[in-house]
Amino acid sequence: MFRLDEKLARIRAGAYRRTDFIIADAKDPDMGPGLHGVGKAAGQGGNPGRLRTRGEFIDSIAAVIRQDIVDIMLTSVSNLERLVARDAFADSKVKPAIRANDTTDIWVGRGAKYSASPSRPFRTASLSRVRSGGSTPQPNSRVALTDLGLYSITFTGDLDWDLASLEAFADFRADALANDFRYFLEVFNPNVAFVGAEDMPHFVNDAIVRCLAGLTEAERPRFLKIAYNGPRALDELASFDPSLIVGVLGGGAGTTRDCFELICQAEKYGARIALFGRKINLAESPLDVVKLMRAVADGALSPVEAVKAYHDALRRQGLASRRDLAADSEITEAPLRMG
Image (cartoon, rainbow, N blue to C red; front, side, top):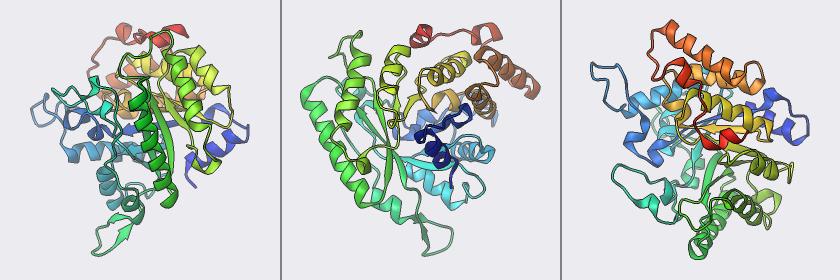
């Protein structure tokens, strides 16, 4: 059994403890930003400004899996196929997952303006192919990649586009049931301004509850992934239905304090999962960030203490920090200032 299944079982049974807080690494930027989303290979090959190659990016994913601290590793189907072929998950309890759809609001390639339009549903990944398996190093041999994926939806407040998104979600659920595939649901904040800023967090909560109310237990997501819109909005949703497990997404890279503070506040106000992408992928030392995220989630360190520990770790490895300790200890993301 994966660590994820054990933790979800305890959370649903009402036996949650802080060590059950779930941490996921979202290594799926190739499904949205594309090439530039994988980050830079700083200090390698005498060219510190170049972007990482696909091979280097996959190596960085494998390193986090080997560390065996995160509970979920989320990737694109193509990269998961490579990881499974090299047995990257063989000796860990990290659950592999795929990004199961790629709506237009995450199409943020260089020079693109897609994300300025209301989000439109789209799916690249084939669930039947994921379940039937990817190629292994042995000829004519196939192995199932995973039975878990992230499905993303962005409610905008525009009737036509939200209806289209809900219809696509219904099609996905039917496909998931047909392929014995489980999913967790990512709900982004509106990417266009049809809903006022003051109402937006509660519009998102209402939209989530409304879109799940007509689903049987078998159709419902295993958990949610939402933006942290402050303590009031998170507590409102998390306390509404204990069977609906709420997680937060990481958002922008921010400061190191932002990363650890988000873990701390999310857990305090009812979230039981953190799914971070850029906050891990773009860190100077991703493995140290993951290790300290776990310590903050467990209550072993405060966010401020974790930032100091992170800078100590960078110094020991001779790695330069993008910010000095004082600047990196600041909270810069507005929702975190509400907590």
